[in-house]
Length: 113
Length: 187
Image (cartoon, rainbow over all chains, first blue to last red; front, top):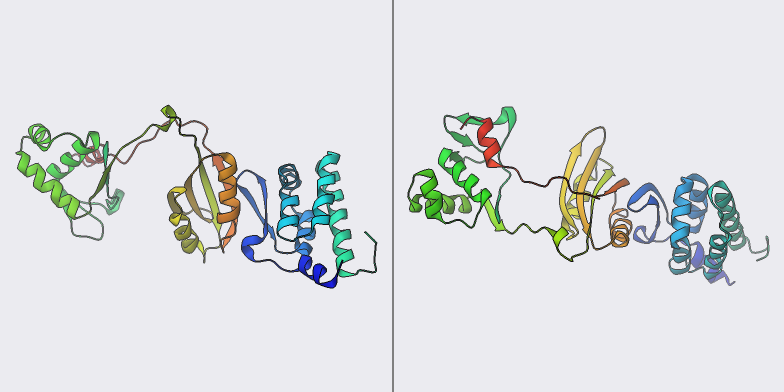
């Protein structure tokens, strides 16, 4: 992973490209994330229903791959989907995966991926 | 077919009811009993002839014509449209009532932006406990509805949260009726 690639993934995206957390069709929680860092923080804070909703629709994978341009993270999220986790177990696994990725990108000498 | 009547009428205590006429809010346009009866007739069936309306009101068709023209010019009658029962057609659609909670400083702008979309059929602002915008939204599918709200409404500056209720069954749909209003005023 080059410095340029890390910077690109860690950048702040425009408001219209942010991730907006919904709990169901059309029900927006008011939480959104404009960067990987915010995305990681919101995973710990939003209603767990929102995590289940977006994971099942493939929204997290799509946003991380297409907006953040982090294909590696998108693949990891796809593995979480296949694991069938729900509720707080899902939140914990998602947070662990995203926070490890964030740490790795902000400090390349830390945990290896 | 039903005419679309301008919603400038005032109701409740603000209405000035002077004899058999009705004063409209802001603009000095007065409607008398005959005007209201013409509007009522047109709301029932806007395809009926001026002669038929004239007969019913016991006035000449030219009187009806003149009054209708005047109300059209004054934009009291905004237009004539066709009411379609889409449940009886193959047109697939999802209707939803979307409540948008907003930062009070941005409400007007958010409402204006919403009103620009062809997916928004009606939009209103309301001050209840919080300042909200209510909109009736049309989409071809639930997915299209969600995409619209997620990509177009949620990103608007000042949107705090959104509640969406998908309409599953229509129990009644009607329009403000001149007949009911006239009854209230004992015209």
